[in-house]
Length: 382
Ligand code: ATP
Image (cartoon, rainbow, N blue to C red; front, side, top):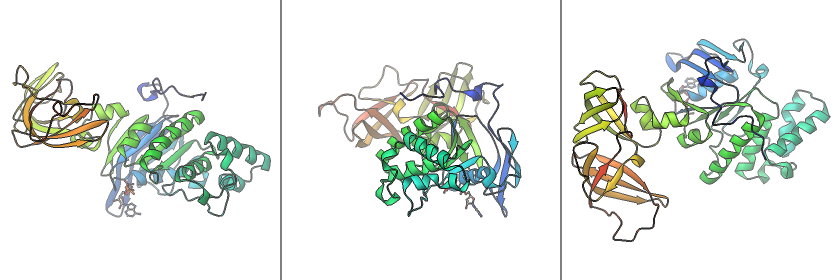
């Protein structure tokens, strides 16, 4: 039985105003000439977190990570680790290790020598090196591969060697840049869970950079979504997915149907949006405090829409008619692309709970009705 340092369900230090952040990034900016790669980013990360920086290519996430490691100097702002300002600490003196995208193992050294390399450079006593290498080999489950060379390992095993090599030095903070990028999908999934287990056993704080939202959703205690050098939202995976605060985040994480409209009613417990894109009214069961008549967007996830053959009792709200234009059978679920009367295409996903016979199945060109619960749409104003 693996002993866990943190109960993930209860581990939420960011909600405790008295909790001391472990990493404090305060108004950090990085300019390359006139180009602003990281723009005024402030972040507080707590000990024991797996914090994921998530964003598209070029949004500045690696630059932020490189500033933490000390490979780039901020143009402005400060970075503190465990209460210590890192500005004057060179990379090799920071209690931080970085695991790169390409694992860069030494090809001519065995697994154990690769792992021991950093400790030898630190001139630790031989006995201590041996016991630390043995311990970490056990944690990453590579004991039996200790004498193999990197080319005799699978991609997943090489990834674990790189992780062991980074962890054996017992950094306070481990930075991981696209750690699972080189692995195929199935191995990635498996390794994600392994990474969480190892992190929980050791209690090291991880900051992970990824462009892969599924990876961030699986690994992260919290996610910082980046766009054009700025952090646009910080939250737990559930908060980011269920309560995006902007069109950008709603669209970046998972798929979403976005309907532009105007607020026609905004009360504390309900909102009504008249949407030409929908060709009807969207009713939401919570208020948003925006000006009446404001342009807003209702974001509805494909799995929160129901698809039916017969019209519901009332078509007045949260319902639209359309024709099925595409169906993709994915095994565990099916994706339907439905062209609604306004001309917009709506994406709906349904789990394949039962095996349906041919005449039960919804088919191409069938007229259908899409409905959703008023708790399902998220309304954003930007
Ligand atoms: P990716 O996922 O593609 O690695 P990223 O979010 O990690 O993207 P960064 O590597 O942080 O992006 O780069 C952010 C921006 O800064 C990019 O537009 C990049 O071209 C620019 N940039 C990065 N390093 C330099 C540099 N040394 N000189 C000039 N521009 C740079």
